[in-house]
Length: 267
Length: 290
Image 1: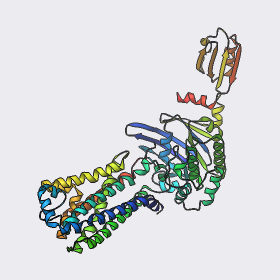
Image 2 (image 1 turned 30 degrees about the vertical axis):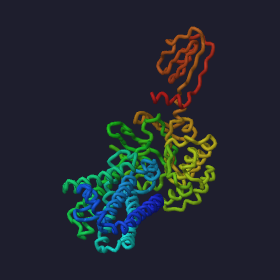
Image 3 (image 1 turned 135 degrees about the vertical axis):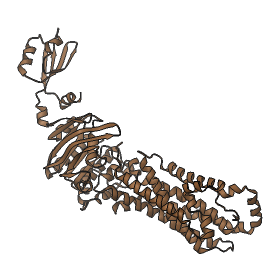
Image 4 (image 1 turned 120 degrees about the vertical axis):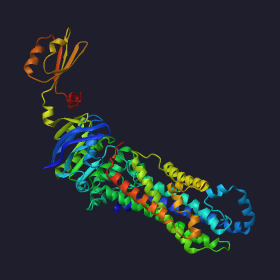
């Protein structure tokens, strides 16, 4: 319990900054929608002049206008997902490697605690931190949709369904980060790795949108939780959802085994 | 009872050797020195004891229990001071010490105050504002605050000024009198000379010798220097003579063996001056290092 508490205290600032920025981004971005909606016709004509592929790359399905509430919210939420992915991957890459990088591992691991206790404490503290972000995203989404819907209606149930995917999405990126971090002897730059993972997979999903390939979709977790699909249809793709859970379990079990057998080197 | 029992312990890092087939026993109440040059395997051995790294083969027992299997349990009674001290920079000293204390099922507040007073450590400063020596003090308090039965020190004195080092050694002696066993690695031999009862010498991953510090010093090595004209090296090329060096009109060497043989050789030359002295531990160890 003491490690869990310590981890949360160390993450305090990060938790605060992430949840505030995510909420601010959501509210600020959505605040433009009413103005946009008023001039939907001319905006649509601009958008139609863009190549179809570009819209698909942004996750906008055919027939879904950015000037519509759902279209615009899809676009916004897609960018929020990218930010969430960066945060989750960042925590994933750092929690099990930071003590070695900052050279505090000798302190912690020479205490009367097992590797398992450290693993679970760090994992729960990081996941709780991410959960705060998820709540911030959820609440700010609901507020933004209520305040800035431009008079258009939306299905609350579908929005809630989308929000509920956030913790799974976070867990997915975090567990992949944890697993990868243990494959290396030393992780030097957590930030570049997490940006690389989050943006790289985002790009893969964009390419998938353009060339319409399911195979690429399986590689990119963004595809598992496409806001456009969930907002319109209100259903999860269970096959992809199962795939996500599978990857999470494999990554977590794998990193648990690796961490328990890991040699902690001195300088 | 043996507090530390190491049997055939071997550790390879990938292909490169850490330690090879190390056997060692440290009895309860001993102050045990672990001596060797940098890279000889001192830290590797200590990290294996603490479960920071896992052995390739062999085993280490602490308080009669396997150091890996019962790691969390045996570490309750271990205080460890690493050679390089790094702590969570953002924390205040007292917060770090309290965090450290939170791992043990006892109230350590009193002991934290006592040791910090002795070591003159300011508890309210932030860790990243501390000098290297002060960080080392944090390490000392952190390692001793739970009154451990076994204190493991890896090159502990770097960064401490002589006065602080003395205070620290006194503290260790007190802990030892209280019953704590101390395992002390170093390459600075004068430290060992002052504190330890027994030493093990490690070289290139293997234990070369385990000796009483007393025996080591009484090992009958003599350091002999002769000054004179027309000295020839051949006179002293005898069994038991090592490190024979000639420099202009001076000959120096170490001798171990029948003292009469060497006095005979010495009497056969025309000397201006002769000194015969006990070698320092440093010089004794040079033999093991070679």
